[in-house]
Length: 245
Image (cartoon, rainbow, N blue to C red; front, side, top):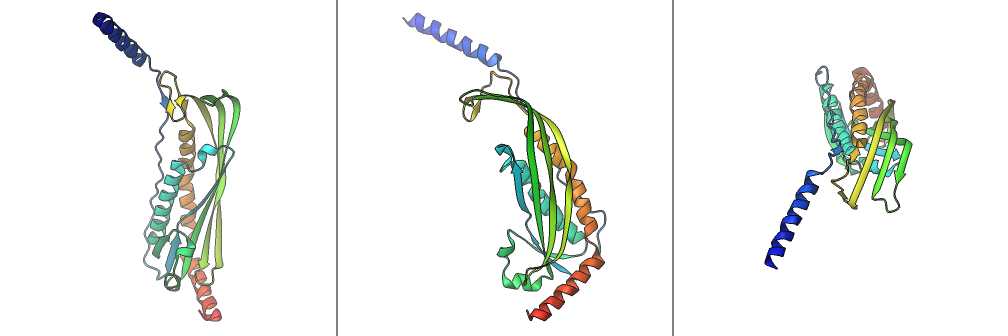
């Protein structure tokens, strides 16, 4: 009986070794974001104080996996950092970033000449030429393309009255990347290692965001015309005086 126990143990060990050795190569691409930008020059102080509100983000997708996508969050964080750096490089003093405009207190608003509110709107769509899913959803495959478009809107507000003083809109160039997905799960949150799983959707999304990032920052930089901003500040001061803030 002891001999049978050891034989069974050896057979089981060999089967596990064979199965592990037969594990299929996985191709779940982990992309590398390149969301970074450096201002071309640094200007002197222009004695204008801007309050920066954290970029507001809205994503519309025909496929739920992009909602709450971590790379979109990384994009927003980098965008906020570079917006602040660009403002400082242009000679503005910056307060914030504030999570939301309503988070600004009255003293915050009073010491700020203007408040900058960025809004990012993305449309992310998948178009499939081939798709399959089994009844319990443990296996699915998709072939097709992912499309991205949208715009970024920058609004300068007079902080106390919330009067819109300046609005600029950057249309994002439409982007497209091929996608290929083939996934088999043993449990809802565990992939089957014996299947050659593949999924390049995150990589495709990041490739598109990498391309548009420097273009957006360059256009924002060009919008920050010192003479124009000073005229807006003068108008906002006139508005405050008129409304006796």
